[in-house]
Length: 360
Image 1 (cartoon, rainbow, N blue to C red):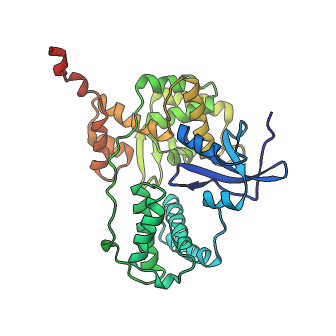
Image 2: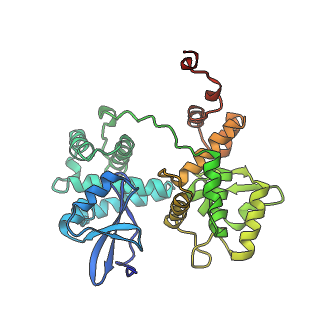
Image 3: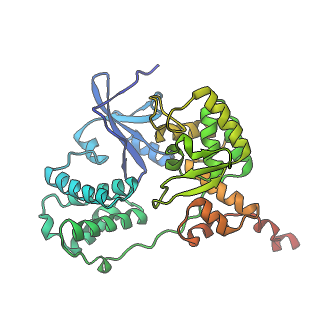
């Protein structure tokens, strides 16, 4: 069996290339390696195989490559200068003081770090609108990064220059990309059932069942505390979800039974679902791996993510006749327009439409 890796220092997974890759530096057999994770994709596998010294790790379920200057640069792991670190740190502290969410802080600081590193040789105070256009063409478009990444970067740059540098960057003059209109990925009820049925571990089954049955985001599930579950009223309290909003969602009686069995076996102390250490949150990466293994075992040939379960919950509610306004409240959407997207993936009305082909 392949020897397990030691993580160099204490380093989080770094997203790169707009989340197509996740990378981490580890030490294996006295050699530094870069571990690269990505969704199963034939093109990406072909790309990684072209890198000299690339190997597959069964223990990590990921590819790993030699830690070289070229590979570090390839995956955005090169050292950041003190100037960029200092400016990013100032920006991060300001975002924290304004109580931006952790995910927004992470996204904006990473975007700013990449942007300022791109113009390393240039004085920050001399950066203008023209430089943003150069960066868009030479970095974002060249790497074929998404329009949402481009918009997030523009937002971060605008905020940084307005607040930290006290310099007006005319973002209106910068062409924003059109956002791709993508439909949410949805599983059928039978596929959801198959995924949940193959889970033998009570903790794993309870986590994914609760995620689907309440339409929770991954972070909302992992942040749940024991007292957020109210079995007397059959509700779950979501405290400070996305947008720093509280909400309640109904709790299925079947889930209550499942949670009771889980509690008797694991006896969590603080968080509803704890990691290996008592009172610590269960890992996001571990939860994703639980789903990945269940999907494979259920023989579902789709790149299912945890968020698919939330999309499926909303779509199945709509197909059961639940009013869109209630679904909006249950999901915690600020705008009804966000919830309306599920009308485009629901098959309830489509199944009643007769194709003219049938009359031929």
